[in-house]
Length: 249
Image (cartoon, rainbow, N blue to C red; front, side):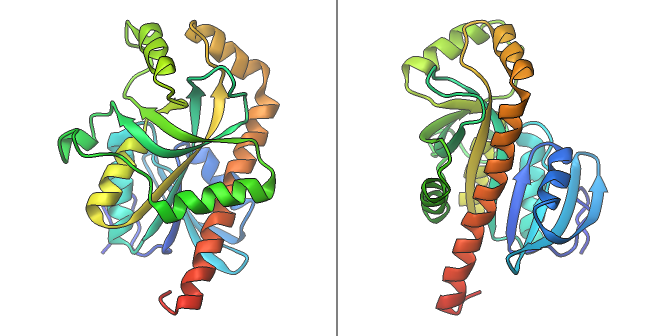
């Protein structure tokens, strides 16, 4: 049955989840036989192949609420392995523009996951995907950091600077808006979800300074985006080979 929001009926078992619909086209440039199969609201979906592996790419828009809609409907269409390829703002000074942040768990400051289950329930990456992302980041020689991230619902709260200082002291690596929601719903629904984030904003006590850093270093941010795409594709490809060897794919 065609899903009401993503407007898809059948997708690949392997799925990439960018936030920005424009990033769907960017992923398509790395695939063979890439075809857009649906485009509705913030949800743009493309299918193609990478080294013979069928893969679907669906944009989730901004925030956990729309990301969870995409995830739920993609599961209904046959998706089983999901990697978020998003952007983040650093919460540590040593993380540079274009560095990759591999999330092993996420602070649940989002509202979407709280609609499903109370916040005692952890938001954690699938271990198989986490391991593949880490190992392939090393193989590819990409600058990366593995640790806890934070997912939130707004950039424009009055105490943003204070919040960033708080999480900096708690060794949180970076902030995004979707990872926690995807981790929680993935676990609840029994599918595998991971997240790799391209850092586009340096840690700064002044949010405007961080945005200016991004504007001034677009080339590094673009390089990070390309790297997170390739890292996610290589990781899913490695997992698909292992599944094929086991005879379960």
